[in-house]
Each structure stands twice: as structure tokens, then as C-alpha cells.
Length: 426
Image (spheres, rainbow, N blue to C red):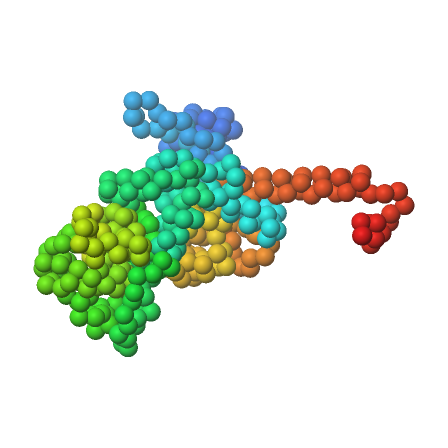
């Protein structure tokens, strides 16, 4: 209280005012520390702290040490908490974030690219293994679109040691992984001016692999571009909507179309981002011209699309989950900035992500700062990504130092510049 105000007559109220004033000028304190400071019982201090907490003046938590887990699921005793004035704690938090940001030294573009190679398991020695490794790669890259053929020719083999297509088939068959085009074909992305265009099977058609459990927030809503679809595609889409997941032959029978016409319709719906299938083998068949020829052969044992069922690709009905997207992008890239998010096709706007990223930084889950010298604006990173950035920078500096030492030791006596070495080498 102010010196001009009379001291409270109630001892409890007087102790509360003393504790209030003390915490306004100090950092987090335990009840035991305050009790020793004021030479009173710990119970009396806790009573005052609870009163101040009820008034919204102080907060309790573990600010300078890790919490201890109570035994047998019991609630944590009040004696184990630290207590701090709300405004003082907010100031400490701001100063801590500022200090953490100043500790980070931005890396060069070269070091950043090496970091991405390691973070995404492309660099030698960082590859994953087996079915579990394949699942982890898909979990990290889900939402990114690559040409359909590139997934098994480049993307997965460079990240999974001795990759086998059976691993992806197993993940699709178990229901853990699904595929589909997330960004619609240009012929279908304008609801006001739809354009009819026949979309042929192509090895460069972009598709994404993703976990089934993330489809409700990852797959964007579509415009209802029924007029942009051919009559065959509308018929197949209608059959899938009425029947649900269907095998290829069932679609032929339900629509009355030729098998080749159903194939063209399916690819049109895939390109529009409207259908998917149980397995990735359906897509392999659709884009492989050698397997397409099998359908026309009389001795073909079965149509090439008989392996799995086709189904409509469900899209999210709610607005985008910005926090889920932010966490996914952090998992994929480690470090986020406006320059990084520009590479994404279906991510929320950077301004919306910033709100979430700032909140995650305030909660201590991620770090803000300047991590990549060539990127402008705000940047955020996972703590483990910062550790890897530092490791890459140290390795790069050590490599440059070794190269410089080797160059100096190999330099001929009397050579003072690189031009003399070039003349000698010539």
C-alpha cells in the first residue's frame, strides 16, 4: 500500500499487501521462500497468494524449473508452485524471447539448402527405412504435390533406403495413407467461368500423398464445377455419389460406358481433385501407357483398374484449421518464412499463419528470429530445427576452414594470388 494509506488492521490483509508489493518488484517465488523472507508460516503465505490469484494479480506455475509429477495421479501440492506478478511475468517473457532471438545467427542460403536436405532425409546418411520410414516421409510431405510418377521415381526413393512400392501399397491398403490432387486442374478451379477441357492421363499430373486422419483439414473445399466436367465424368461422378466406393467394373456397369471411357472419366475426376482410390496401384495403372494397352488385349486377365475401389475425395466442410497447417509446415520445413510458404499450393495465407505462429512462440513451442539470411520478414522455427541449423553451420565452417588450410599448404612459395596459380596450372 501507499505510505499515505493506513496499514490494514487485519494481519492477513496486511500480509497480503506485503506479498503483493514484494512480487511486484521481484521474479517468481515459492511460498517457502516468501515465508522465510517475512518470517511467517508457509500456510499464511499460501493463503495470501491464493487471495491475490483470485484477484488476478499473480499467476502460479513452474517458471524456472521443470514440474515434478505427483504420485498416483494426485493433484500437485501448492508448495511446489512458483508465484509471480502477472505484469512482471509478462515482462520477463518478453525479455526472454528477445534474448533467444538475439542468440540466433542466420545461415547462408547454401547452409539453408543443406539443412533442408538433412531435415527432409535427402542427404546421405539421413534416409529412413522400411514401411515406417515411408510413413514418416509421407507425414512430413503431406500437402505437397509432385507429379504422380515422381513419387515413386524420385521423392520416396531418395528419402527411404531401398524403397519398394509394396510399402506404399501396404500403407494405402491399411487405410493409413490416401492420395489425391489437392489443387484443382485449371479447367475446374473457376466456378464462374468453367472451361470444358479433356484431361488426358499424364505422368506429370500433380498429386499428394497424405494421412487419412488429416484429410478433414488438409483437402480444400472445391467449387461445384459440374459444367466443367465432360458427360462421361459427370456420369462416373454420379455413380460414385450414389453407390459409394466402387470397383472399376462396377462403374462400367453402372454408367453403361465403355471401359476406355470410364478410364478417361476417372482421370478427368482425378485431375479435378474429385476422386481417389483405395490403393496407389490404381494411379500407377492410370498413368502408365504400357498398362493401358492391356485393357484392349483379348487375353488380358483383368482390367488394369480392377485392383482397388474408386471413391469421391471428401473435402473439408469447415474453414481451414490454421494451427494444423502451421504445425504441418513446421514439420515439413523446420523453418518458416513468407518465402517458404510461397512454395505451398493449399496452405492458408501468410498473414493468417503469422497469428498462429506468434501464439506458438509465446507458448514456448517454437522460436522466432532470423534464421536464414536471404529470407525477409518474420521467421519461426522448431527448437530441433535450430539445433540442426547450428550443426550445419558448424560443419560448413569447419569444411571451409579445412579447404583454406589445404589451399595454403599447397600454395607454391612466392605465389601471392590466384592468378599465379592459374598460370602455373596452365
